[in-house]
Image: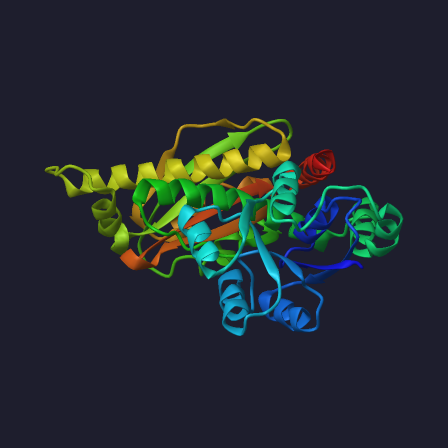
Amino acid sequence: MSTPILICDDSGFARRQMARSIPDSWDVEVSFAEHGKDALTQIREGKGDVLFLDLNMPVMDGYETMEIIRKEDLPCLVIVVSGDVQEKARERMLALGAIDFIRKPIDNAKLMHILTSYGIYSGDSLATGRASQNNTGKASATAKSEAVVTEEEKLDAYREMVNVAMGRAGEDLAKLLGEFIDLPIPNVNLIESNELSMAVADINRSDRVSAVSKGFVSEGISGEALVIFNDTKSQNIVELLKYAPSASSENLELEALMDVSNILIGACLNGLSEQLAVAFSHTHPVLLGQHQGLSTLLSDNVHQWGKVMAVEIGYAIKAKDISFDLLLLFPGDAMNQINARLMNTDRERQ
């Protein structure tokens, strides 16, 4: 009898990755959900004996979904598959009843170990014939990866790529600060460079912000990363970092901005490097300005690019009333190179 498998992730690219990672000889019927609310409906219909669950999703995230599964004692084994790999995220989900936690992108060896350790999959090659008929979700996902990719699907793949990278950055920042970092769903847009200031106007509603910039370049891929801070919360960051007292609070704030920016940008670029199989060269971080309007900080940086892929990630430490934004900017002509490398590395993992 086939095992009902449910893959819950808001990214179609991530769902296809997960489906292709399922062992070929495992006799399964694969279903998909785009958010937790949809997943709960399908679990109640008997479509999710095993649930592969993402954390950061719209409508209903992984935490809310897991809480309801536990409250209603729904019959499913939950394996978390997420770009958010903070230790506190792992501890929270395991406490709610998830059996294990896999970081994105999927490590097939780790997945096989979990499945066999918990007796979910025996590792035998029996029922291969049935599997070839019943693994319709996996077959569909494989066929989809070979089809022509639309612009919307490209943006979805970029969003998932950044989701993984921002999780790495959140993990590093959480270790440094000893606090849980709230991670959002990345906002990805392809816009004209002269529209950038308008497009990011809602990033930080403060009249005065500070920003740190760092350029990066590799084979055919370049870009700029900016970390944008609300000036009214700078002192909160200084206090959290527990710097030794100094005569100049201005110097302490600047040091805090540079330290946090280096961690966020460095970890995020490392996550991108891993997924794209490239090694980025970084410029030294540059303070674009302190206590200025956001449009002033952005005006001289990307206007020459034409089209820009803008990725906005809003990090928050709610317990300390701290928030700041990481903005990744890629020139439009880098998109095809990113897409080609992303698809190639994805196929190599299978």
